Structure formats: C-alpha cells, structure tokens
Length: 110
Ligand SMILES: [Zn+2]
Image (cartoon, rainbow, N blue to C red; front, side, top):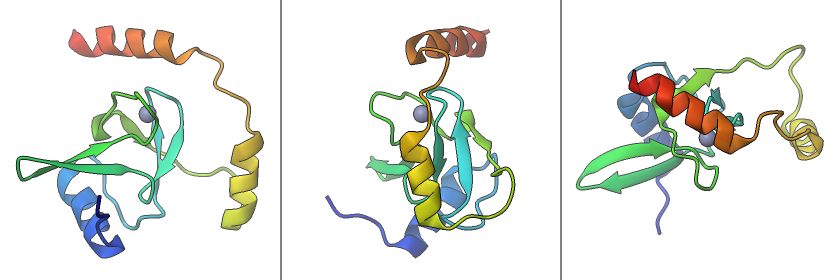
C-alpha cells in the first residue's frame, strides 16, 4: 500500500477534519475512544470510493476525527526521542477501552 507524502497527508487532514485545524503533522490529538495521543504522522488515511477518511492508528479503535480533541503537551517542549521513551513506559489508561467505548457510543447516539 502506498503512503501519501507528508504534504499530501497534511492537506488530507486539513480537508477531511473540518472540526479542528491542522497546522502541521506534528499537531497532536487525544483520541477520546482509546485515550491515546496521536499525531498527524500516525493517523491512518484510507481512501474509499474516492473519499478520504481518517482513522485512529490503534487497532480496532472505531473513532474518527470527531472524537479527537486538541492535545497540548504539558510543560516544556521535549525532543521526539525523549517523548517516545516516555510514551513507551506510560501507564495504560485507567478505564478499560471497551467500557469507555460503550459509554461514548451510547452518549453520542442520543
Ligand atoms: Zn483511538
């Protein structure tokens, strides 16, 4: 499968996600469904019938861009490698994903 170039990727994010602005692929979002911080590089872009759609990179996470909230890193800016190391040791989310998903879906349906 071919991956869109960075420029194209950013343009797709900006076009499809009309709720929140993407300034760069380093922009971060917090996925409300799987509770994970994702950036523009990680977001999965799929193309179905000529239409692009955005998907959370977490396996089986059913969210789309409407479930992604702006995420600002607390404190000072860190280098990417430092950040990756931190994410690797980060504790798992407190709420089991299945429970969070259920409650969010029923809330969204109302
Ligand atoms: Zn997710």
